[in-house]
Structure formats: structure tokens, C-alpha cells
Amino acid sequence: MSLEHSKDVSVKGDDTPLPQDVAAVFESYPADKRVRLLELRGLILDCAQRLFGPASVTESLKWGEPSYRPLPKHGGTTVRLHWKPKFGDQVGLFVHCQTTVISEMRALYGDVLSFDGNRCLWIPAMGAYPRDAVEHFVSEAFRYGR
Image (cartoon, one colour):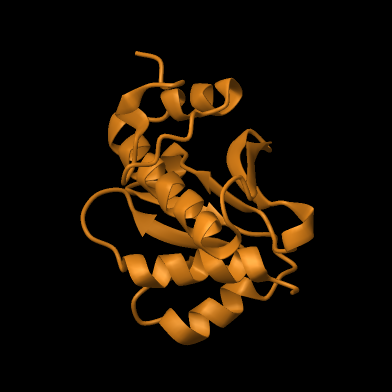
């Protein structure tokens, strides 16, 4: 099944079609990881729309990973989604390592979120996660440097 333009990729009513190259990457993930990554994609797109309005983020591949960048007029930094076998049962949301987004979020949510260095927020591939804290993370990344 192709994910491109499929209603099966809708997340929280999000019907934003996947670019073909991004869809191919999502298709390459194991099903359980893909479900969580698509859910996080929906969260990212919803967050961008709340912050800046419709069509305010560019979805593309960076380093072969689905990436979400606010339009230049909005500032901010890119958020990338990814999973590889060495990540085990978690998926990552990545930001540029020279931002302070991770350190700021670690100070606020270090007791409820798991981080790696200065570039990654880990989310369990299955089960519950603190959605509000993750939305805050994405919001801070998209507003970084403003």
C-alpha cells in the first residue's frame, strides 16, 4: 500500500498529502514504528498550523529523514523524525545540535521525557507519551531564534 495521498495516513483529521520521497521513507519503517512516526508527523503539522497558519512548514527529506522546517519568514529550526534498528523501541525527534532546544526542554521535562545529547528527544514507539510536552518541544523548535 502506498502512503502517498492515502487516507490511511490521516492523523487527527490531517489530510496533508505526503511528498512522494517522504512517503517512500515512511513506507520503509516497520509498521509499529511507522504508526508512531506518522502520529508525530500529524502533531508537528498541527503545531505549525497553530503557530503560523496553514502551509507554514516545508516537509522534505534531510539526511534521508522526514524533516519539517518553518518557512523562512517564521524563523525556527528544523525538526526531523527517524527510526533505525539501533534505536530499539523508540523513535527520535531531532533538532540541530547547535540550538539550545534540547537543553531547555531537558530542564523543563527531564523527569518525563528522554533525551540524547543536544539533538534528540526519544519517544516510545508504542504506548503513551507526554503529548503536551512533545508539542511544547516542537513549538520551541519552530520558534527558536525569534
